[in-house]
Length: 129
Image 1 (cartoon, rainbow, N blue to C red):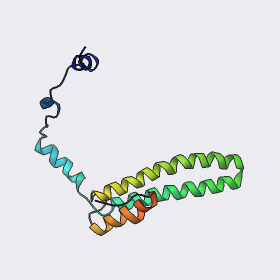
Image 2: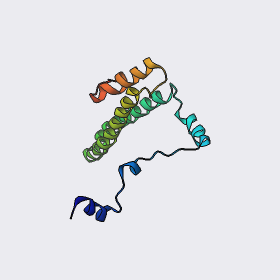
Image 3: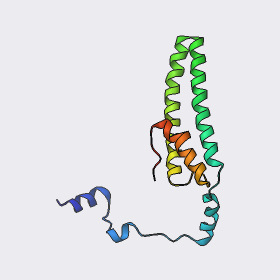
Image 4: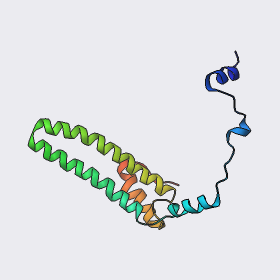
């Protein structure tokens, strides 16, 4: 049994390379409606940074207070904080990614600042284009 007949048998019909990536033409009205959401500004990136670092800080404060309450509560809150902070580190790395594409802020310097000082350095990643 050849690979093409095997894959056809396993995954349905074979798609020719010309058919696989046929570009869809969207209506101009749809493109116009979506375009307003793609416009950049200087506020979304700042709000994301504040949100992520606030959640990390609150997780740390909550864990410290839980340890003062009891060892068991401290261990539970520490385990929960690990998951929360890990997720926020991923979000902080995403801010760096957005900034490297110039999408975190409209202002070029603010974009660089958000991508390096407030996100890149804290997750040990570099801002390079």
